[in-house]
Length: 324
Image: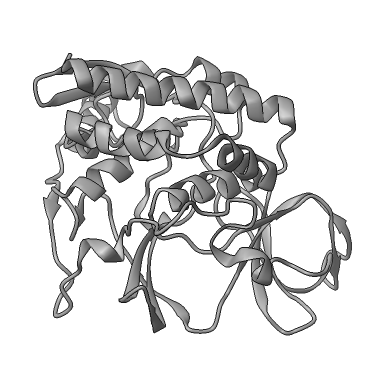
């Protein structure tokens, strides 16, 4: 069998790129037999939320620093483990740079009303069994009874496309420079006991690829190709250099974005930007400080992150007020 000529290889690559560039249909798709409501994605907080301990509160926070090995997680970018505490509760542990950024980004999304599972950051912990001994700092997420993951949901086809809450969720993730939007990061939780009137949550769960910058190659900006790197994680200098809104033209918003989800982002309107920025602007300095402290960031790092975040929020509010 003859090998392909250079010309044939180039034509083949162009074909692959052209197919990958075909726009997906971003549309509202309901779950079969169980129509979703926006309350399953977002609910207005009744009062300012405590970001020191997040959705699980102090009650669910790990009360120990030594955990029993269950399994090693070798999938994804960040290394991790499944472990058990002395009460038999199983925890998913993520180590590496995403451990900090995931806790903080999750706290912020939850602060403005989006459903999130409990997550906690431990800067020092030990493993019993398996690779026993002191481990790197990690993000701990409990596997709670009555909170069963029953599925996944994609950004481009879900029950919320076209709603203010969905658009606001996109904006909030862009503002926090969360760029890994693959479907497997979005989970559907079935709740055994309804919480605030809903028994199902649609969650953007694995949000550690955030608080950095977008780095997808400009030459590939119109193609959806994984493996070229879309951004950095837990990267303060990169976050400080990352812009937010490039321009607004009528009902269209162009973001300072380099990644493979341009089709999803193209659905955002100025009203979505304002919706998200208004809610983020209502968070107090105490909440911002608590969110970053909960992720193990120093006061100096917290001050730099929150300064940049507040600049982005102010830009969003100003741009949508002017309509330009």
